[in-house]
Image (cartoon, rainbow, N blue to C red; front, top):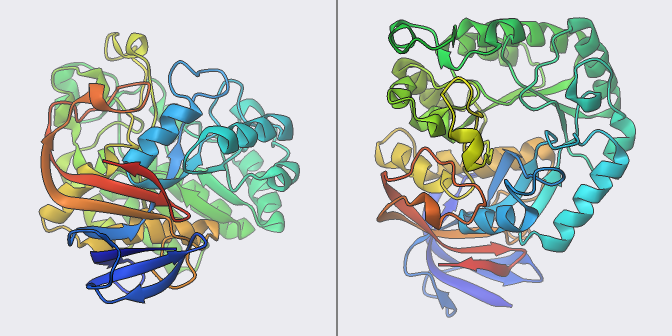
Amino acid sequence: MSVLSNALLIDPETGTETRGSLRIEDGRIAEILPADADGIDCGGKCLAPGIIDIGVKIGEPGERHKESFRTAGLAAAAGGVTTMVTRPDTTPAIDTPEILDFFIRRAREISPVNVLPMAALTKCRNGVEMAEIGFLQDTGAVAFTDADRPVANPKILQRILTYANASGALVMAHVQQPDMSKDAVITSGPFATKLGLPAVSPMAERMQLERDMALVEMTGAKYHADQITCRAALPVLEQAKAKGLNVTAGVSIHHLTLNEFDIEDYRTFFKVKPPLRAENDRIAVVEAVASGLIDIVSSMHTPQDEESKRLPFEEAASGAVGLQTMLPALMQLVHGGYMSLPTLWRAISLNPAKLLGLEAGRLVVGAPADLVLFDMDAPFIMDRFKLLSKSKNTPFDGRRMQGRVLRTFVAGEQVYER
């Protein structure tokens, strides 16, 4: 039994910030006490449910040189992430119960934080033949996605959604029209023309989302759009929710805090999927998170080695690490007055928990004691070589940031202390 005392409790369920203490027993929150209770003094810093990060890529199997369970777990703990919901875009893809079982056993052996795996939607993520969704569910898959590969054929996706609805499976999709998005590395517009890079219109996102919403309406399936990044797609999402479709949507930290001008010097650490958007798109998406239209914010942690990034912009690999940079990057939205801490925690902890049917994400008696203690004001300069991930491909390198994780707890056990 332990008590975390004298903390500012961030409760996303009630939307409150209150002074108090938490008593932890048997890995769960046993009691909420006054701030002056005896225990481990939190110094008045923020204590919140641990981050549940949907869309984390781990390099095992096949790309362990980019990220292992050990390094991803250490980075997650240092970033206040208590649950990683992992992607199946590994080598080979996680598309059979045998590969998934290996993945789960490795995670349990090594990772200091919770790991919940997603499995591939189609075999080899090729968008042609449905994966063994029922068997993968039985093995432990919490959702199904082909990661950054949209299922191009609507008839195939309709069949998958129909089956997923019957089995209660969650489908997560990448809403970028594949033909329009192929080989594009920047959002179309005057800036893309200036840089001379292959571009894609934001309408590619809206078109794919409109198609998918029609299929969800046909099948009644439970559906999550992994990243909504432009204002053109927001009315489609709003209409789908107004119709009562079982639809949620997410966005990455990079699309909330960066824009297309950040790639002006052809810095490949800023190359992500979808490409960074215009500033008015970024602001629209930030406002959608604040209003609750976009449900979830994630890191979309995608480790890439130096060799794959030290290439011309068009040829370089896409993606950025985010497990350890997520919290300080998002603090700029709080410090900038775009949203409160409880509103932000609704998107990074409570809503992910609800989507996956988890007990976490709440500061209530009986909830798992998966917690993060952080100083929202602590200033520092981001140094990518101090990140615990194997890969160091962060766009925030050298940036002045605010917000430091002080301690992280999983089931009441401390897994990180600064």
